[in-house]
Image (tube, rainbow, N blue to C red; front, side, top):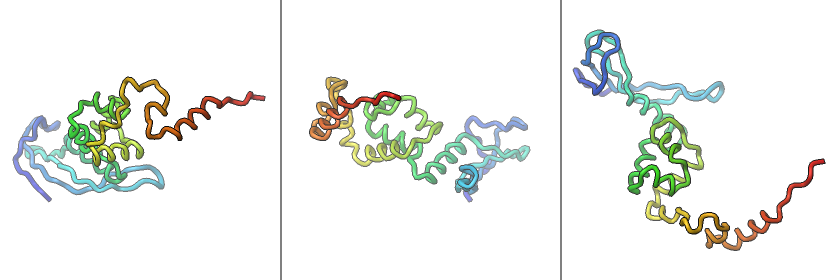
Length: 177
């Protein structure tokens, strides 16, 4: 167990006595995740700050980040930090990353803050971008092709998409009886 003694933790004040002097320990624990028969205990390491004056134990924002990252690891998902690193490695703002991926800008912000877990398909998409960042620019549909037929937008899929578009145009709902 790692231990820091007599540290002033930035922005942390003891809610019981108002002091700012803590002993901080990195503690291994588990947190519950899931419900009913799917419930499990997920291991996590948290910094616990204990006030030297009154003994009050306090968790700071880093504990919430660690809990979220542990749940992401348990589920096999990228953590908020990893998602942010993918976007930053491309040099994109959230708005630019949203345009690239088709995800909403607010959704990306929620993933990066840890307010929302991405689904498995979004996670795989992000992993592909991380693995081949040099190909990421090819994901963007040029503005002059937006609104055009799929076969025009994605010419490499031409014959398959032409058939799908033809089927889509001829599709009609049967009248309700």
